[in-house]
Length: 423
Image (cartoon, rainbow, N blue to C red; front, side, top):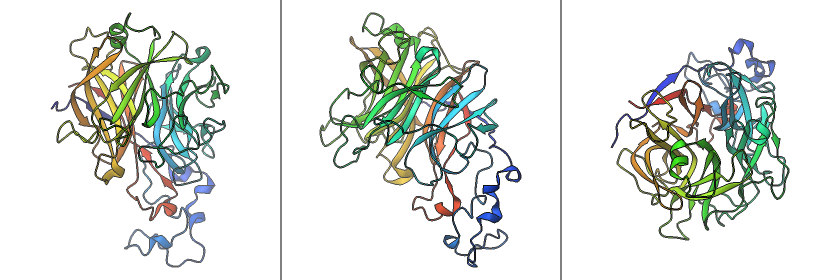
């Protein structure tokens, strides 16, 4: 077991301002329950029955003051993270504004100059920038990642477009092809709005066919460049694009006894073409419900929110394998492998060695660890200038039975942004 491979340097992270400057809708006195004498929010004495309090009356009581957090309502996975041409940052996140439970998932966005102070895209009232609007994504806009010079040279996100159908590793009936597809949208204004490609052949969705049968999931595309993989696969496949792509999922156990979670690898079929991708095979394919070690979590039955990076002692390594001190790192969220605790999720990382198997890539995992032992999931990398690889994840609430969720009026936040390097 490799101890301390990922050294995480925390960056202090402050939300959008003090409560004295928030809009009037957040005024605490307006959130008091009219005529309800059993709701007492006096923090100088033991609380009464807080479940008797009205919606959002506890909005400021436990709300984090040093985290990226939505203006209100539900938020979860980070998505669409990238550094803009002027050096500032766009951070997207899954959201359901005006609602405190998961549903109608859209991308909301915020901007920052320093990964510390953030301002909501298009104002706090509605910070949605990419949302369900087409037949192929009418159920939700799930996680996506960025190709900085994508469609017509604009920053482009490839995201999971979700259609109303059975969905997920444990759904009954099982998920079928077409429930989750991958689609393209691009921005001309730095992420304040996104334009989807047209629906139809040669446009959205750009990846709709499953690479294998009986899948347990097919989502969270992660686009990345890898000189290591490009060198290894030179002349091996007809795909020649600069970007590789992983899609998280798995194969259902009831359909195949050797099934388990999978990370599927694609490559741009041609350079500068974001609509066409060639499947290369599974990049990571462990057995289901097993652990690499007693300190390595559990693979569960399905992967989500995976990402790929390469690190050395200074941060991000962008070599073709010539840096003997660099390691390729894969991170993934796993489902159904935690005995019911932490909502049955593990956020894992693995040190990987890639191999040319003659037609694609296979991977040996040399070390596996837990990204964060708290209530954290969907941790993802993104590159930052200065050879930095930065990690951020989603913190989910521990009120799993929603006892005081309506009273809080929000759910979820981000972790601190953390620089990654080897030590």
